[in-house]
Image (cartoon, rainbow, N blue to C red; front, side, top):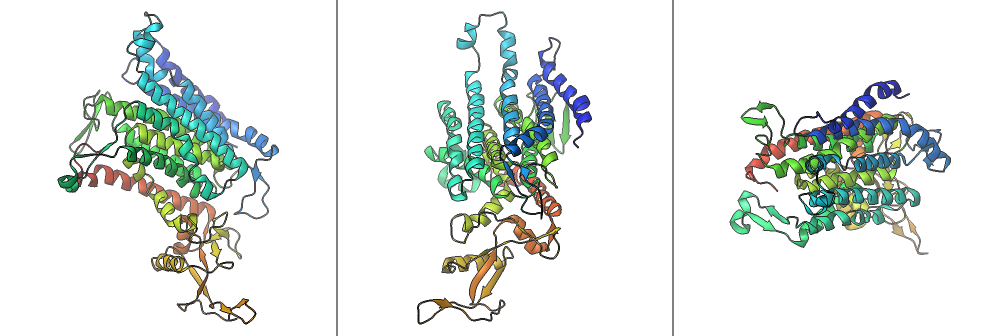
Length: 486
C-alpha cells in the first residue's frame, strides 16, 4: 500500500500551503510563483498516487488492461495510467496560469480590467504558456488514440508533429530566433551566427518527435518508462536552478551563483531567468506525477503507463527545450535514448525484421531471469546491407547473430537447407539476431538479469548520462563555444 498517511497529513498540507502562500498579502521574495510551482508538484504527486488505484481498476473494467509479458501466469494489469497522470498534470498547469503574472495583477489591482488588454500585460508570455498547454493536451489525446488503436511503430513516428503545431506557430508569431551560434573552429567560414530559417522550425518539429518516441521505444519493463522520464525531468530542473536569482550567494570554484539577477549562469539576464523559470514551472509538476506513477509502476507493476504517458512527457520536454532555447542541452540529457534510437534504426526502418514487441524474454530454465530476445529471418533472407549492418554491430558487441546453412533451390523450385549448421562459421545465412535495443545489449554484455536489476542498470546509465551532460555542457563546451551558446 502507498504511504497514504504521509501524503494526506504531510505532503498534501505542505503543498497546499506553498500554493496558497503567494496569495497572502505579506508574501515577500523575488520568486513567489516558484513556491507555488513546488506546491503544485507536491499536489501532483499526491493526486497521482491516490487516484491511480481506483481509476486504474475502472480502466481495467473498461477493457484497458494487459498482461505483463515478462512474467508467467500473471493476471491482467490496468493500462493507460498515463492518462491519469496527463490529466492531473494539465489540470494543475491550467490552475497555475495566474501565478507567473501575479506581479502584473498586483500592479493593476486598482486599474480597470481593460488595462490588462492594452497595457503592460505580457501577452507574449501568456501566449507561449497557453500554446505549450495546448500542445500537451494534443499529445495526450494522440497518445490515448495510440493506446486505443495500437498504432504500429512506422506510423506513430510522425504523430507528435501534429501536437507541436501550436507551439511552433506561437514561436513564429513571436519572431522567435532561428539563428544558432557557430562553433569557434567554423566561424572563419560561417561567421559567428548562422540563420537556419525554416530549417530551424524543421529541427524543432523533429525534436518533439524524437523526445516523444525515444521514451516510447525504450519501454515495456516495469518502471523503465517512468524512471527515465523522472530522471530527465530532474536533470532539466537542476539545469534550470543554475540560472535562477537566488537571494543568497555561494561559490563553486571561481563561479559565483546567487544574487537577485546579479550572478549565476544567467549573468544578470532577466530573459534567461524567465526562460528557465518557465521550464521549472513545467518540470516540477512533471516530477510530481512521475514520482506518483513510479510508486505503482515499479516492479512488480500494479499499473502500466501506456503510450499516453510517453507522448505527454516527451512533449513536455520538447516544450521546455524549445521555449527555453536550450534544445542542445536537452538532447544531452537524452544520450541513452539517442543511443537506443540509433541502434534501433535498422529495425524501425525495415532493414531488419521488427517484431511487435522487442522486449527481452524469460529465461527457459529460470523464470526470474531475462535473456535477449531475437528476431528471425525465416520468411525472408537478410539482404546484403542487413548482413553487413548486423555483422558490424556484432563485431562491437551490440548484437548476437545465429548462423544457419545457406538456402539451396531444389528442382521443384522449393528451398531447402542442410540439416547441420555451424554457428561459428562465417559466410552462413543469418538465421536470427538479438533485437536492437539497449536492454538486449546489456543482457548480451552482462548475461541474464532479473527484471528489476535490468531496469536499475538502465536507470544507472541514465544518471551517468546526466552527469556526462553537465560535464559536456559546462566544461567541454567552452572549448568550441564562447559565452553565447544558443
